[in-house]
Image 1 (spheres, chains in turn brown, orange):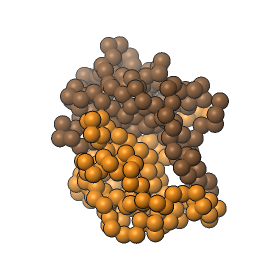
Image 2 (spheres, each protein chain N blue to C red; image 1 turned 45 degrees about the horizontal axis):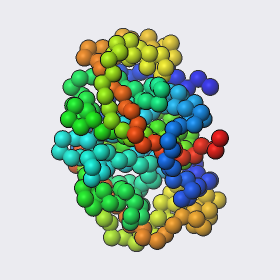
Image 3 (cartoon, chains in turn purple, orange; image 1 turned 180 degrees about the vertical axis):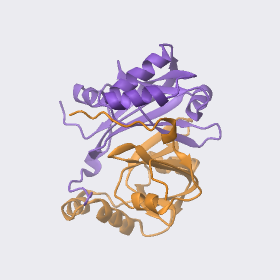
Image 4 (cartoon, each protein chain N blue to C red; image 1 turned 45 degrees about the vertical axis):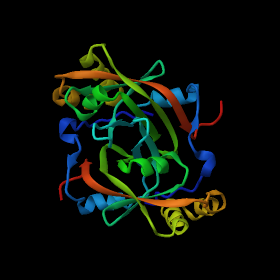
Length: 154
Length: 154
């Protein structure tokens, strides 16, 4: 399989800042895509994990567990950045930087809402059996900076 | 299009540490895939960009330009993490954390080697016309910590 790309946007393809995400970007963010979430470790090194997310009213919601590195990092330094890349087009992406807060909604209900968003009935039945529910928390990233690349102008 | 997943690895799918990447992972890393590279801004917030990379002798090589945020971040704090996610399987990924150094090979020759790796002849002809060559540098990430998920045991 030749995975090489036959297009090249060059500098014109660099992510550009935006004050808010246009409708086409919001539609992209409602798809069940992988998010790369980065935080900063207490040592000053960056940390990065692949996460499910829900886009809601301009914010990004994540489900995690108390005790995970990213949760401890959030408590010490709430600054984070998330990038969502189109798996079919590496020149198409959205990035948002801001601060994490803990969202007070029911974390297990949110975990299953995420599961319903990302999984078929078969996958969801499996997740309900094996996904840990103890110590769940919901983290919310509220962007202060937004970038996007590869979307046609509205 | 239903993009939902019908499998769910659960906690068993969490990235596990490894001292070195086994052959199947190295073969994955030789594919022209998108890398998410994170560094830390002087303010203490994380920075993240999608990059092309070349895997070489256990290290990850990137082409960038002096003056870009990630290059300035590298000069102030060389700690970085890179994640490469399988675009066809979000439970399959490789992550490597360590320090960046500047590699002294010819940066423009490396830029075109990367172009040959990622682009078809048509894409490469375009890149040669429009990709900036001035102030190019090569950054090398030497991992101290490696994780992987979704690869069958050797």
